[in-house]
Amino acid sequence: MSGTRVIEKRTDRRATLDFPVRIEVEGVVGANDFTAINISAGGVFISTEHPYPVGTRLTLEMSVPALEVPFQANGTVVRCLPIHDAGEGAAGMGIQFSDEGRFDWDFLDKLMES
Image 1 (cartoon, one colour):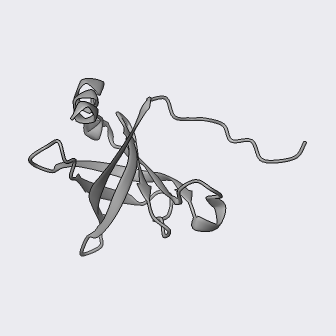
Image 2: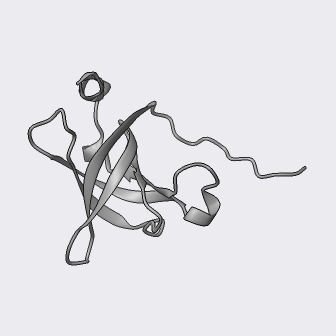
């Protein structure tokens, strides 16, 4: 058998929606700015050539243009796609929201309509 087969573990549908995200890593002073390229009720994919390691816990401040005020969520890096493994896709990191950070789809649908 040739090639690598990826098993899809995500259960929430995703919305393609680019927006700025400011990330603070737990236990580290300061924040870094990134761009999200998709979001779901359970997480977000951040475009970056230098993803944080899997297991990194962080706080995200997401600035969606349709909203007047940025919103925050806590999450954990669950997937890294370094630039050398990205192929033609985007390098970055998948962040799973903690349970209290999950969103409902009514909220996300409103964001996409704006």
